[in-house]
Picture 1: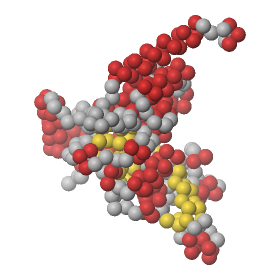
Picture 2: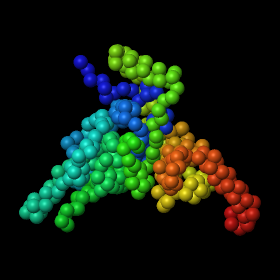
Picture 3: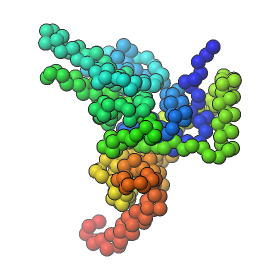
Picture 4: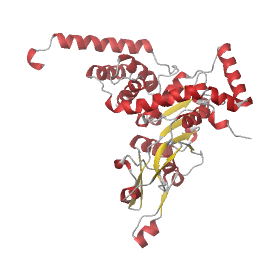
Length: 355
C-alpha cells in the first residue's frame, strides 16, 4: 500500500490562487521571507506545502554535508565545506521539515557543546531544525501558538539565510536558507503585529462558496484516492510545466530591473496604506521583481506592483478597531495615479541640464 497522502499534485489543487501564487513566489525567491497562510482547520494548507516540495526540482547537494550545501554556491558554503579541497555531490529531493509546537529553542537553532569547545578548543555543533531546513521547506503549523521568541529566531534566519548561535562567548554560524511556510487558524488568536509584519507574504484561505468548485474539489480528491497512480500521471504534464516555469523564473530573477517610477509607486502605496516601517516597501519590491520573473519578463510592470500589494500589505496595515482586514484595491489604484501624475509633471518641468 503506497502512502500517497503527501504528494497530491500542486497543479491539481482547486482554487486558492493567492495561496498557490504566494508559495510559488517564495519557491522562486526565498528571500521574500516566507508566507503566512491563514485559514480554518481542514483546508489545503499542509497539502499545499507537501505538494510544493514534490513539485520543486531535485537539487545538487554536497555529499556528506549535514546542511546539504549547494556545491555551486561557494559563498554560501558551511564552515566544513569551505575547508574541503574537493566537494563530491549527489542529487536530493526537496523535503518538508516540520516544526513541532513543543520545540525548544535548542531544538530549533541547534546547540553548542561549550565544554567540548573549552577542553578541545574546537566547536562541536549539534544541528537543529534550522540546519535540516536549509534549502528545504520549513513548515510551521499554528505558528500563533509558538513561543514568540522562537518565531523571532525563525524569521531572523529566514530573512538572513543564516543561523547564528552564541552561547557563553562561543559562536557558530551556518547557512539556513529555506522556504518558510507558517499557518494559523485566525479563530485561535492573532500573531502579534511585530511578528506578522516579518512574514514576507500573507494569504487568507477562502472558503469555497461556489457549488461547482466544491464539487470539483470532491471529484479530484476521490479520483486521487481511488486511483492514485492514474491521477498522478494525469497531472504529470501540468506539474512539469510549472516546474520548468519555476526554474526559468529563478534564472531570470537576477536580471530583473525595477524602474524608479515603479519604486515610487511602491513607496506611495505604502504611505497611503499607512504601513509602519520600510519592510513592506522592500518586500513589495522583491515580490514585484519575482512576479515579473514568474511571468517571463525582466522588467517590473505596474501589474506586478499591483499584484504584489495584495500579497504584501494585507497583514501590515494598521489595525482600526472592528475593521475588516481587507486590501482596498481602489485605494491602490489612487496611489498609482497619484505617482504617475507627479512623475509626468516632474519630467515636463525638468531643467535641461538635469538630464
